[in-house]
Length: 215
Image (cartoon, rainbow, N blue to C red; front, side, top):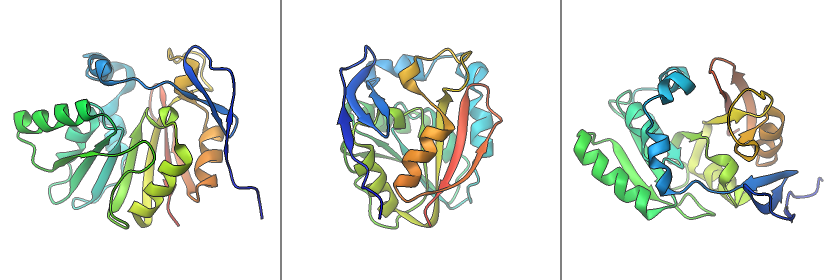
């Protein structure tokens, strides 16, 4: 039986927190003051989020959790594609939850459910999700072991995780190194948490779109 994964420490990098998991220093969190960056007008041109959403394989009645939903950029766009389903917009920051709640009313979108989680637990019922989405957020989770374990419980059998992360293999992706991930690193971490790697769709300008499945 292999050794159970654990955390290590290192001197903090300028953009890291000094906590290491599977050889990767965890990145500092971009907090609610970063809403402007999330909602920037050139995001579509740079990252093609509409293309990423089109690549998600979701049934019309799917229940999807947007983990680290932030301003809801993805949540509200995906919700329109789930006429009989819903998006649980999960974040650890009450300020983001307040923003999501007000935005839901402003946009008239009723199938986005803002949900406050903790650093260690998504706080969702067991077997309640068909899928989960993490967009440029996982690398900032300072308790990835615990968060992935709680997410695994919340997913139904064969439930999928869609992981978008900026490609660390590509030096031309203009993002700080601690906020990028390689496919190999992501696979190491998610497979250690009991997920099965399905595919990495190479269709986006800056990001991996990696799909993992709960066996």
